[in-house]
Image 1 (spheres, one colour):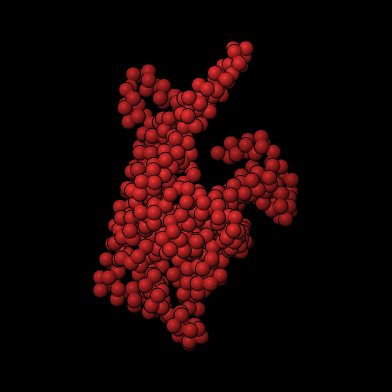
Image 2 (cartoon, chains in turn purple, brown; image 1 turned 90 degrees about the vertical axis):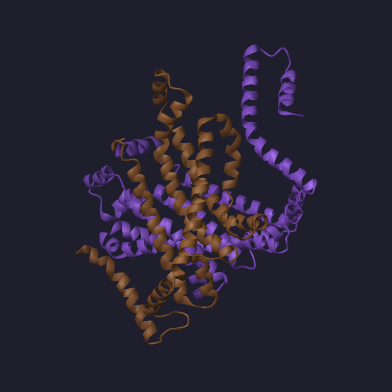
Length: 291
Length: 250
């Protein structure tokens, strides 16, 4: 049944006694639905073409597995618990590295943000080292740490450290002037000033760093697992590639996308939960005032 | 003289490194002397190998970034100017974007081989995402009052696009291209690690690791950083120059 038939069918199904306004609402809703459904055309078309190509053997199944096979493989991976095991290993690595890198980044960023002296000593070196992307360090790290678990934790820690340190540092430096002045008027002690003014004002910026750091950590982990690993989602891809089982490769790619999305959404949810106390209006006002 | 403070840590680091290796306090096979890294750098530079490796990396980086940015501007413009294309492409684009980009490499190696095309296509993909996002947002943020003024002057659709929408979206598009340049350099290095051998800085480093030559690897690390820094500096310089007509307070 095509889209238009579906919509027509639904419209015919509506009883004629529906008042005109209701009918308008319904057709408005259907119109919205139809517009939303437009986004499904492309994936459906691609899926159809893919199924057709696999069905007609336009390409050998080692190069283009049927979509049904990919779904089946994904289902088997899930039901056998194998997928969960690989996801668990990858996530444990991310958790370890992210905690380590996040803690170090928080300390470094806070120290540089609060003290000009620390900034003057540390920032130039930090900035210079940052010019090399995480992956640039990878061969060196592989020589120093081998290709075991510590390599993964170190790479993830570095990937998350940099954006968190930078964002905390800049967040502290950008505490709106009027907050600082209010704190001065109230004669806050240093500890009060940090606890009541600086740290709360830095939290949004910290979360920007956390989210970016986690995305980068996930990206780096997948890359390390592709290069040197015998477990984890990245390894699953390499394994499938070596066996020429592209259904396995595709199932793993989908899983990597889903886990990446869940990680990012998880942090966004946490941010919303943690910051719900924030009086939105006054905050918005302060922001607008600062600009 | 406060800037001198910034030199304290690097100098300390270098001195420790030199002392550790000179008095064999660490395994010198693992950690080579700083002097040897410089010597290796100069030797490779003289023999011309380094420059050709760097050239190969930069060429595929530039090729991929250009291809990806062009495609990104096209798709971003389509999505930004037409609600139809936005709805048609938007959800697929955002779904594909969720996958950590390097995960596509093994798949690409099956379909495109492990040679130059696969690398360039992968680099293009890495540049594509940020350019699409920034083009889209740039176009959507063009004030409707400008478009209305253009309508009053009876601009054709093409004129509205060329005279109003494109200049209005240019800062955002350029910002997207800057991000794309940074990403594509990262992708170039990653592609060289993961796809079979060929000339390139990434391959130089992988070879160095496999033959246990840390001096080679360190030369690679410094080069990757130097090129990355130059690319971002160049990108922001071009951005500033391109937008010099803009009133700075806007």
